[in-house]
Image (cartoon, rainbow, N blue to C red; front, side):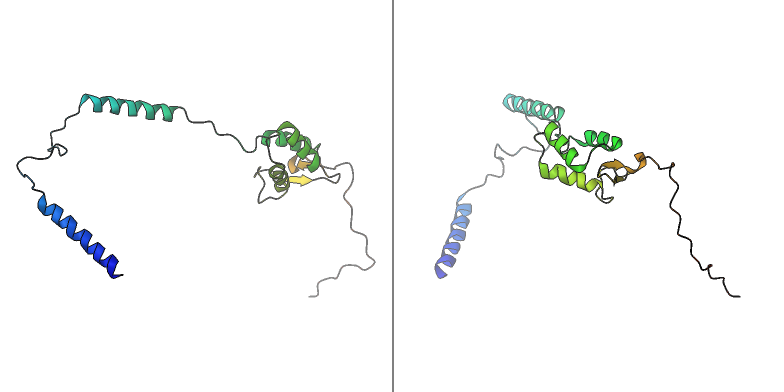
Length: 163
């Protein structure tokens, strides 16, 4: 420990000695300091400034197009409108058409469609039909041909409220 303290003290003393040894001429400023109002641009600096400016504008004008992680969303929406595919059939369709998509990601996307919290199509609810096919709830045909099941009749009349 004492050795490290001594070396720190030695470094401080050396730096102080160097500062004392340097003479600063207050009348003449070093060439790196420019007086206020006196700005000088050398030709080599001007070229460098122009090159940097053109490089920055070229980078800003041509941003890279963003690649979608889920390019199959439009296709899934069409399938859900038709109501003709089960989850397995949709997954097979997606993986066949988009081989770069991960199976787990596509499967999770389809599963999440049935959950209102995670559904991609927030305004439209997806339901699973009796045959296992997925379809938007607003596209499910209403069963108007068959009457709604009625409650079975009871032998006892309903209780009348007492006054």
